[in-house]
Amino acid sequence: MRGRNARADDRLPSGFNYQQAMRTLEGGDTAGKTALARNSQTPPEILYYLAETGTWEVRVAAAANPKTPSQADLRLAGDTDENVRAELARKLGRLLPDVSDAERTQLREQAIVIIEALAQDQAPRVRALIAEAIKSDPRIPHDTVLRLARDPDLLVCGPVLEYSPLLNDTDLKEIIAACQVTGALACIARRASVSEDVSDALARTGDIAAVSALLSNPNAQIREDTLDAILDGAPTVEAWHEPLTLRANLSIRAMRRIAGFVAAALVDRMVERQALGEEVARELLLAVRERIDGATVDAQDLRSAEQEAALVVARGRFDDGWVLDCIAEGRRTVVVVALGLASRIGVTAARKIIESRSGRAITALCWRARLSARVAYDVQQKVGFVPAPQLMTPRGGTDYPLGTDEMAWLLDTFAGD
Image (cartoon, rainbow, N blue to C red; front, side, top):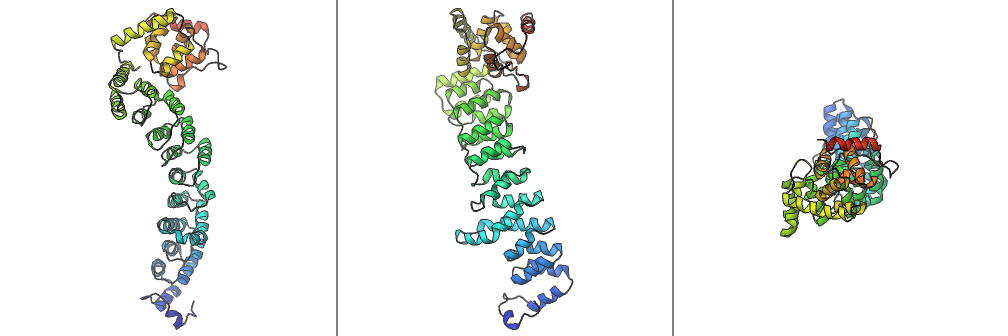
């Protein structure tokens, strides 16, 4: 560098004093070298020299300088100081959005190698900065994006999972299946477009935040059977109530189920949003009164349910299929009344059992009414809204999980109240 001649000086940027720069390089003034490394007019060869030999403060300044040559940036990507590597990642974040398609080849040749190195950095802060920088860029290698998407730190994987256009459905479903990062699934649910298959995979996880984000995403495609699965667990998950009622294009069947467990104000908003006819709107608003949290059922509706249930039981039509049809239609009251009649425990006792949200007591009620253990499980979930930890699962998939003596005792307890 000392052998630079006058002719070379003629090619220096206007206003740059090469001799003064040389004196700064030969001296020990860190502040001066830092200023030189930060200066956009500093020639590439001097920036390379500073990136290679400077103190960490000088190398940070060189890493931030957009004029630092790519060869020097590559050296800085492996710098021993985390601050230097972080500053380099920040610079890429500033520069990448402005790279034109015409510069694509140059980007691949110069920046991609640096991005790949920083994506494997040992410091989460550096990986997070590079993830933020490339999250929406379609020109990054797929393997690099996948590496960041599977990172164990949410600050790293989150931006890529939410924004990267390079992640396909297969990638996303594999990540969902193996994900153990709290908050990562919600990032996927917030993507600009979520397919039916990805929505189904998210719903199956039962992750409260992810399902809430999925329901709130107007661009998430959700199949009817996926929505049904969400509705199965929704009564006890308040975070899902509002996004469910605000979901566009709900079927009448889905709205009937939703009206059975959400607050009246939310049902009002759902009715208004869906622009329903007067008759259907009235039906849904009446369903709010059947909430299990203590609301009383309209007397006329109760009489109608009692008449229908009595006829069904008397004609021998009360069975698994009839109960499942009523549940699918959101007709909880008639199911409760029919359970009271079919079990001969009485409608009042049956309502007490349902309102208790006791998986054991509801299971006993279904047993006495001669329903299958599988349907008893559905009644716990969709009529009694039993919290998941208290659900009684059929033994072996088909048998009642409690002994007959215990179930009889449970029923006697409620009948005696």
